[in-house]
Length: 353
Image (cartoon, rainbow, N blue to C red; front, side, top):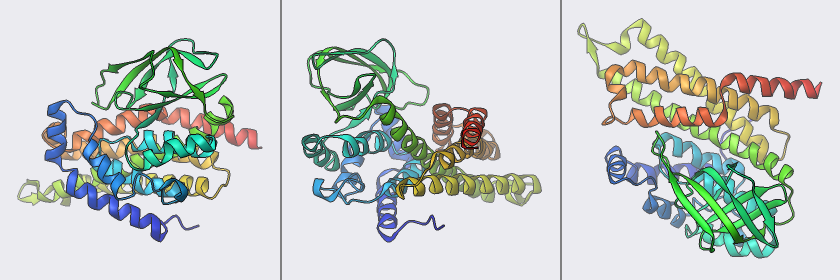
């Protein structure tokens, strides 16, 4: 099996890297942090203008029509550059389920605007109280809604189905959640808000379908974060001198860097395999579980090793490595620890037998 990107997917990856190299510098990210911003809207619009945001949206809705593997091409770069954009939220948890389950009118209304960067979409996952739907009106609240402060559209899963909630509707309230990572999260509260159901998909089918894609996408982001962390460690250990020698020549340092390289490749290959199977329409639950284990266990191990190899510099907020440490920790906590991943994989294999 060949997990390399196709020509079109590689073009998306190259274009994304070109944009990120130009716009997502350490100085720029530090400036955003100081200003209190957690979303780089100018960067998002640049990606939309060049067709990156709409890469996996069907051509009839102003996209490029690439497979799910095309999302991986973008998300790996999001992780590599710690880009503060809602790629996971708007593309994976927003555009893809609308495209898969939405009515024709919903697709025509929402997908072109997503591709153009006009709409930010996110899915609310964690209900903090009972969510009810009566006569096309929804009430309830959700916690830890990623990019909820910036979202224009929320996809809200309920036992009655999946509902599309517009930020502009009367009865919608959004409050910020403070996070240690600085990533945008919010509390979404709804009181008798007018809504419409997303097609006819059930809650169970929606969560299984979307869960695989979210997990695969998170693994892709972790692969990018591992690559960036390893690159920083490699460059630093080449120039850091002790006893008139670069510390990269020390056996303990080179062995730990070598282990981190192996882990990085494992995270990348398993995440690509999972995304490839999803793109090909093949059963992917086992491969996603394997990728989750590597991303959770080895992913954070790589970033921790890179921090250790930097010494005190690694925890300096004026140095870029801290962003990957925080990102990796949040991604690990989002997926669950490695023991949980092994248990899930074991259950899959047991049920298969």
